[in-house]
Length: 263
Image (cartoon, rainbow, N blue to C red; front, top):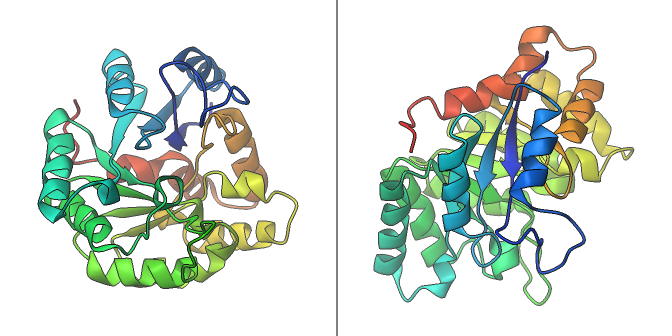
């Protein structure tokens, strides 16, 4: 049976998702979906103000063989860099393996000094940074994903960074940046399913072939399911050697968290 280490799943305490019941974001549904695959682990990821840290940690403690907990803060809701530093340090003390920043949902500039402080602090405290790269926001003009990531990569060289969603339609633009910077990992959760059937399929197939040791995949549950993610990856990597496919499906995330001591 093929293994999957899903790079991105979410749950909420009441099962709602982003304030609606369009998707079932309950732990029970997630566990049922993961069970369909048998051998499945996942990064269980909080989002400040939307999927709370306490719920993520409680679930990870209940199912430590299933979940790697990733905490989240909104750095731009904090007064200054000292408060940001303290919040990141607290996540590390609680046993979280990573820090999630979501500038779009929390409506801030990813290059704000407090955001950059959080990214630097993640590295200092041994947390892997999970950075949503779908930066575009209504009412706030921002540079393209590659330009934003370029600045972050050069500023935060001591922080391991997973570029969630690979910049969406800009995935190929991020390819060269990931090749240049050893601390970057390109993630294709959501994007490989959201853009299925578009010209991006060719780009993703290329990325899987050329970047297999620096690439992760996931479902972005509850938006999609682990089964959908696995089936999509298998289709896009049909011609890849087994070793490359396994790198993408689970080995790269295993390696990324090799130094994490657990909860």
